[in-house]
Image (cartoon, rainbow, N blue to C red; front, top):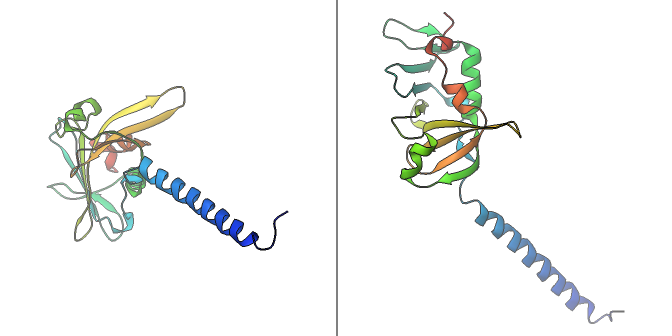
Length: 181
């Protein structure tokens, strides 16, 4: 049994030991993940326009927010959008989570389909700034687990990320499916 004069020493030692364990656990968690949680994360309520440029295609999709809805901008006039398509895209833009970093080298871009000439380029704007500028590459699928992922890189960094979900599938649809006509 501990005597009364040793009890405070044991309590302090135990507190220091628990504190050291917590500090080590927190520092290890930070070391494992040197990047953020999302490769693309926007406040979709502030998005005013979205530009999608598909590879090997001279058509560019320009979506603009109006007070009531979204429109496809064309030289001959605006067309109403397929709201379901736009909602799916906005859901992806609100947070495309990183599963893992695949590379930090420009030489790996072709392997993941994120080179400027082989990927879908997306620019998301608010009234006053660019909120997201990224390249969406190849889709991967694991049939055993049923997981789908997309490779993505931002325009300002060489890193390639594997992301959870269907971002590529939400972006790469025929032009006519974005309109109500």
